[in-house]
Amino acid sequence: MSDRQQHWDSVYRDKNHQRVSWFQADCQAEAAEINALDLPHDSLILDVGAGASRLVDALLQEGYSQLHALDIARDGLVIAQQRLGDAAANVHWHCADIIRAELPRPIALWHDRAAFHFLTDPADQQAYVRQLRLHLAPGGYVMLAAFAINGPAKCSDLVVEQYNSEKLLTTLGEGFALIHSEQRVHVTPAGAEQLFEHCLLRWAG
Image 1 (cartoon, rainbow, N blue to C red):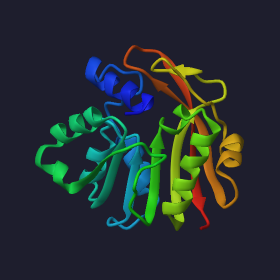
Image 2: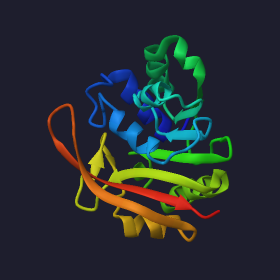
Image 3: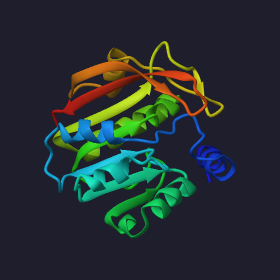
C-alpha cells in the first residue's frame, strides 16, 4: 500500500466525511455545467478523486448511464455506494491510484475536482497526464478544478500544487484547448474560504 493510499484511507476512516474541507452538500451546479456540454447520456464520464462526492448522485438523476467513479480510498467510495443504495449498481467503481489505474476508454468527460493538485512530484503529474491523453476521446472534455495560485498551499495536511489556467495548459502539454477558466470560492463546512481555479478544456486527440 502506498503512502498516498494510507493517507486517504485514514482520512475517511478517522474523519466525518461531511466535515472535511472539500465536502459539497449540493453538486447540482456542477451537474448543470456538465449538462451544458450536450453530451449524449450514454457518454463515458470519469470522476477522478470521487471519494464520497455527491456528483455521481446528481448525474444519475440527470440520466447519465456510463458513470465511472475513481478514488484511491476505498472507504470514500463505500460511503457513496451506501448512500446510493440500489442505484450504486448503475455506477462503475474503481478503487485505484489514478496515475496507474486501468481505465475505461474512450472517456468523453474527465472530471477532477481537487485531486490533481495533490500530485506535487513532476513524475506523478506526468503519469496523470499520460493517463489523460491515453484514455480521453478525441474531442473529449476535461473539467478540472485545483487550488488557485493565490489559494491554499496545503490541504488535509498535504502540500498541494497551485494552478492558474496558463500553468495547467503548460503541464498538460500540446493538444488541449482552453474553453473557459475562472476562479471560484469554495466555502468549507467550517466556514473557511478556499480559492479554486476551475478550467474546462477540450482534447484534440
